[in-house]
Length: 441
Image (tube, rainbow, N blue to C red; front, side, top):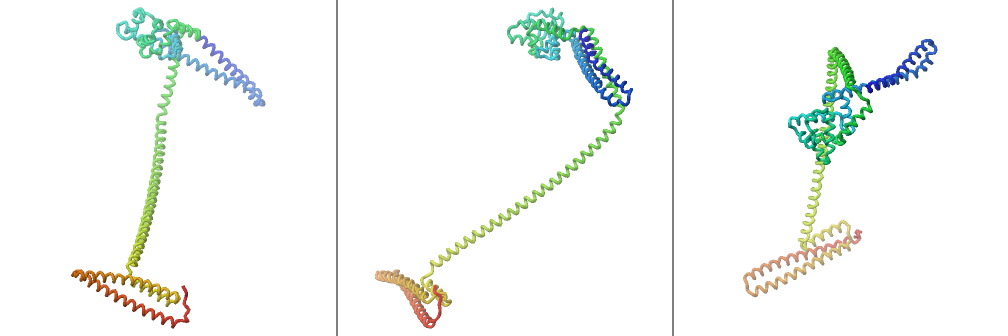
């Protein structure tokens, strides 16, 4: 009864400002009707009353919300207490003790149900709880005659007296299930702690008897029925508007489907363009790669041709050197004289230079002839020695060497004759061209 009285006082006190604001508003409106000319000033005078009325509305809304929450909480406690077979006020005291121990009200309710199930099974000699009750020294038949809050207090007192924490945990688990460990903070204070929590909640909130909870349940049920009635109105309205909403939904569906198709078409177009750009890019890259490959191949061929030309030139130089090394002194002398005659006839060298060059060529030729003469004498001595020994093979070699010497002698004769003719020619040219200007080298 005390809680309901407190709620009534709160409603009256919080709605007082609302009623006062509304009275002031009505008074201000009456004053406004007296004089139209002072309408602006009257509106300014109404600002205060309107603000007070708005504040009253907000306060009233808070009161309604608080009362609604209180109804729901107490209605829930009453229904859970009924399921546990205990008073709602006693359950609220246990809920307060559970909240102080860190348990929710739903966990407490679940654990109380497991406790009652364990007591029922222990009466029939089954279940795990019977062993725990036996170790705790609790008479199961006496325990079954107590109210749920008394049963919890007795079990808490017995668990408090266990010194070993492991044994306390085992006993709590056997009675309350796996959540028994969470019950230990609430149970370790014993029956006195549970009783103190019940007294404290009564001191803080006042005491409600069963009649109070019955009225709260009736009120909460009435509001539940009202909500269902409102839901019914909405259901009927939904049924009435269903055809219209169906048409609207179909139209919206078509619009959304059209948008989806448009987006898909746009995406396909983007993909097509992207594919074309990718292919074009690939073509350009392939073309560039092919061009680069062609340039590289041409450069490779050019380098190969240059290397082949260099190799050819080097080979030709070697051929020239080889041919030069194989030329006889007579061939060298003849080519030198030809070159000197040509240069002299063209006027690019003087007679002095010509004579010196010819003399040098003759000297070189004579040196080579001396070498040949020495060879001929060596061959003659070898041939005479072999002939003296009377060897047929040696005689044949001697004859061969004689023929060689004859050819060399003939060749020397020809060369000397050519040299004399050349010198004679040079003397004649010198006499006939004494006044000719010749370029000096």
